[in-house]
Image (tube, rainbow, N blue to C red):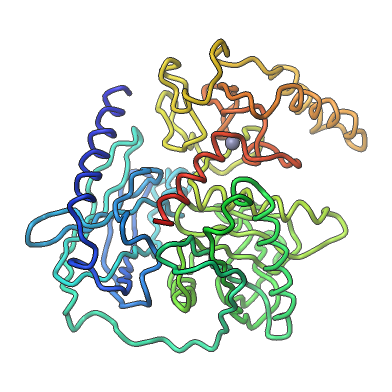
Length: 465
Ligand SMILES: [Zn+2]
């Protein structure tokens, strides 16, 4: 593990030196290059094949920080100058394919194909695109390489005229110096346009009421696209509900009822290209509890209202899922049924900034935030919490007193007391979270823990300069 850490630091140093020597205008235009590819495989195999290369609108990302220094994703796309080999740009991200690889279907050896995209500033000269993915030990290996000549006649340059309106919800300045959040609606019909804009308003207000987004509001632009679906609502396969919704979001993704994703990458990318974006949030017009978040790709959240579910739950889900997609935060909870098989391999340090396997307590990744004298692991009443959680499953109508006791355990220690609290990342043992509670841990009126807050601030910092 320590060897891996040293390697990571070495990679970051290389990245930093590439960045310093780079002059954006010498290598890139102000536009965006989009590369679409197919990602095929099983749990242990993967093949990439090129689909198309497109010219898109203004580059919304930073023009001074073109090299990813956070390393939060399972995948790494690097763009090198073809002539000199100099690293010009890199971005790290996650995919639905990567999550699917841990499901029973993939482990059974049944191959699947998913469509994916990498975007980077449009180069002036030929570049080499290299895509790498991490193995189960989190080491990167190169999987796909292609050379792209920006003057090629095979690059799609047409401007797509889609009949959807872009609404500016919050504007603070040049997209290259701001975080550009794009909210897309799925399952909203033409008649439900006002409902969509009302929902956008509710969610963006909620996001900027939570630290650190509240303090960093001036660093954000928010836009919404009224992408009209032919039918109202989204697919819910377990309920036998099938809808003709434009972006293809569906309940029961990876066979987990409340997990809502879309595999319609091309549809989402085509529509999103109408506006500059660093982050996409898809709100879908259905009342069933659900959402999802894929780092550096998109988050989803239900927006419909029902009598059974309190309204604040959906606002909570919106922020929680944005934590995944925007800052690569891992789930800090561990009690829920999930479709993954050992999502975080035992004995391997997760790359998520808010999870640790505590393999080296002396050098825990959020060490600088821990007060001296804090025991690691940090005791927090886990045994009682787990037994209460267990009895909740058979409690029937008597849930309130049990929930109250669980609340009292979770609030007995301030969220600000950073340590290593066992139980995180879908594992009751062997994985640790930074604080007793956090938006990434429990569905309660609770802030992001200090470590998650810092991780979010770091991502904002990479996009605003
Ligand atoms: Zn947290």
